Image (cartoon, rainbow, N blue to C red; front, top):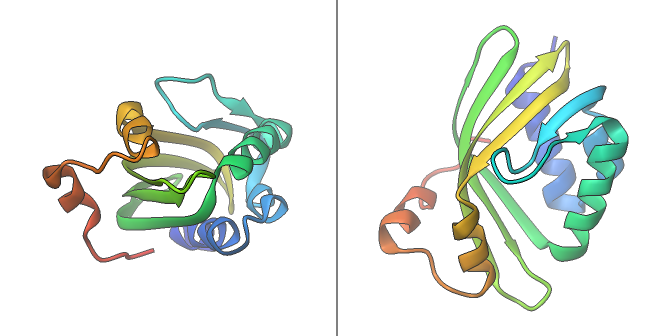
Length: 144
């Protein structure tokens, strides 16, 4: 069995290097429940829901840079802390510190919950800088 962090690394590479939606989806179960913005939007369900989200996200995201700073695995779950960075179509640099929980069934992701402050995503999306204390959260070594 592949380690859970290696599965996530494959997803990160597929998205960050090529924005390859098919490859990202290949790492999800058919019935995956993906809470991209766990407390602000309803989840996307299955491959079709993931594709709908990723197609829309890809249209708004340029140069994705997704970094993981810390992680922990247990039998069925992977917990991660990191930053999602990308450029908007109008050239703003979005920087969003976040934490996530991924549930696994075998080598596939069956549940995915991302937790982040939506106002930070909106603020940096408008071209505003992260406050200095928040910027320190994303100035760390990448582990994945």
